[in-house]
Image (cartoon, rainbow, N blue to C red; front, side, top):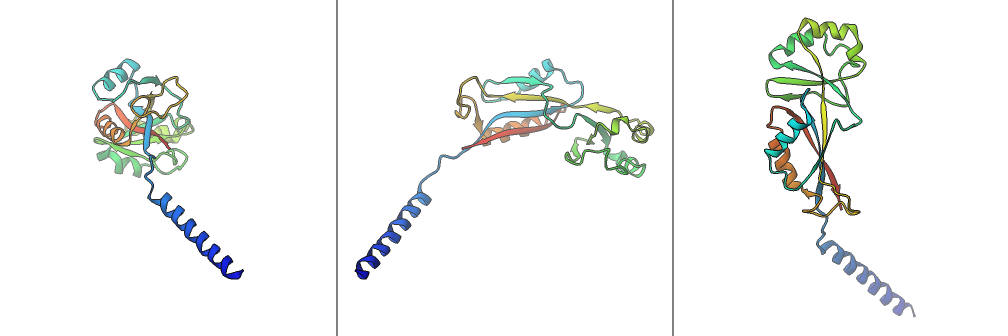
Amino acid sequence: MSKINGKIAVFTVFLVLVVVYGYMQAPTNREVKIDSFLIQFENGTTEPEVKAILENYNMTLNYSIDCNSDNGGYKYYIKVDKDDMPDVVKDGLKKDKNWTDSGSPSFTKGDYVIYPVTEQAIHDKNFLEILKRHNIQVKTFVWCLVSYRDNSTRYDVLGKNCITEKDANRITNELEMNENVLIVMPEYICY
């Protein structure tokens, strides 16, 4: 009886290994897909200008635009010339950590460093005094959601309401070359 149990145990382990190996070898159709972009535009960019900018790029599919989309994040920024950075920082720009948005790091666009700033900062006399001394204006980001989603219940149909990661990377790189586009953030869906 124990010989039979041993053979059954060995056979069971063998079957489990075969099944596990089969799953490991099976191709997966999990492909990263992008169904929208959250795009941050320069202060003052209007929806007609956004449409005109996007028309200059191959966005791959039809899309809808929702400008001033509430991204739940920061709204304000300052734009500091790279050459002026040492003086502005020395004058106290980074002195109060509540002025610049720690969750949104600064980034470079052309000859400028863009600093997302907090709501608190735009009401702080010391912060505003530093900006005044360096002739820097507080600006407001224009957020736009560019979406491929349609009204269907499925939003992951490649070529209908989402695009490949490769296309999204191309679009992101092309759009970020535009002087009015600050940041492009693809919205990923994975299956």
